Amino acid sequence: MSVYQVEVDSGVESVQLPCKTIILLPKDITAEWTNSHNAKLHVYLNGSLPEEQHWIYRGRTEMKRIPLKTRDFSLTLKYPTDMDRHVYTCTVYSREGNILMKKQVVLKVKVCQVEVEEGVESVQLPFKTTPDLPDDTEVKWKCYVPSPTMTVHVYQNGSDQPEEQNQVYRDRTEIKKDLLENGDFSLTLKNPKHTDTGTYRCKVYNRRGEILRMKTVQLKVKERIQIKDETINIRTRSS
Image (cartoon, rainbow, N blue to C red; front, side, top):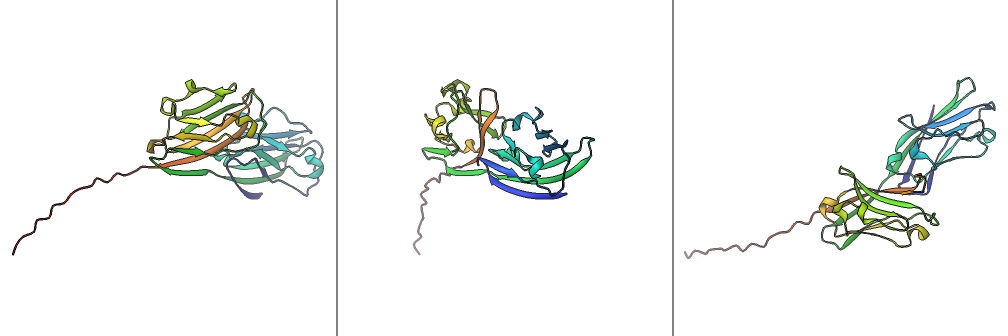
């Protein structure tokens, strides 16, 4: 079984998981992409896409229109994050359920690293992507590590929702006012503290709850060490 390795940055528009063959396949085949936990990313059955996807991949996968003719079952995964680090398997079955082809792709997603020192006025967690999103788009920034998960910032129905924030972040966060038009979902965190160190993830949803965009940022806030001045008296002895 062929194994490929693909590496991308978290937040890129898409990544392709390659799967091509030179084998002549019958018409009535089923092609299935699964991850390390056997969750289904994409299922191609007799030229159609059944509703068998795991919810986290809904609206994020795409296969060429005529894969059987081109023998190209490569899968495009949109807006990959560290959550998508998996060994992905593409399996093609015959009508009888026999395996005709199987290939694997190891996907590595590099997480954006941001580092600052305590005492700075603010720090930005960057997330710029393609613009022109629908008006009913919902944006959620959360901190996942350390646990428990905390809601950092929520944008919904055209405005910020401060009542959704964890108290720790109240009055300390800010995002662009025209974020849907310019595709800039970067988060400004004011007065960052050592305790703000963690893994932050932004998810952008449509009205149906499907993930349209996603990015992970690792923030490290270095603790400022204050050194107290001490006066040392030195006694001199007369010989």
